[in-house]
Length: 133
Image: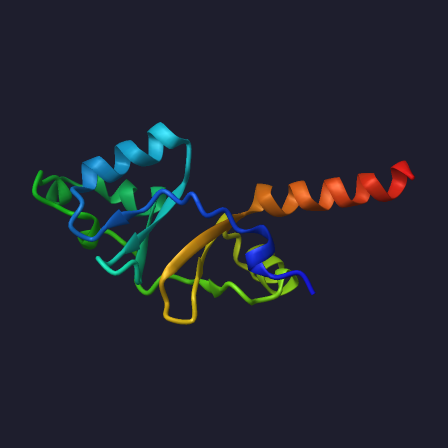
């Protein structure tokens, strides 16, 4: 059975709750990603910050320079454990339109992330390999 651990990327871009919100926005844009896990000091998953969360910056009462990621993040973050089946994660992503899913250890610590392109790349490579033989 293929699991999250088989597909996850471990070089995850993440932020802490105390990160200034504008700094988080710059990280999203600079890295071409749509969301980032938010972690505690011990790498425990605290939430997720998304482009959609940042759209709240357009409201006048939200425009304060001292706002942090914690003021905008979604919590708790949907996540899967590293031993979860790839099929379960795919089913969830299709139904809920998630682009990325944080992957955690049994202690709820960030260990990776799986994105739609990661899964699609595997599917295309495995199907192409099957037809190339």
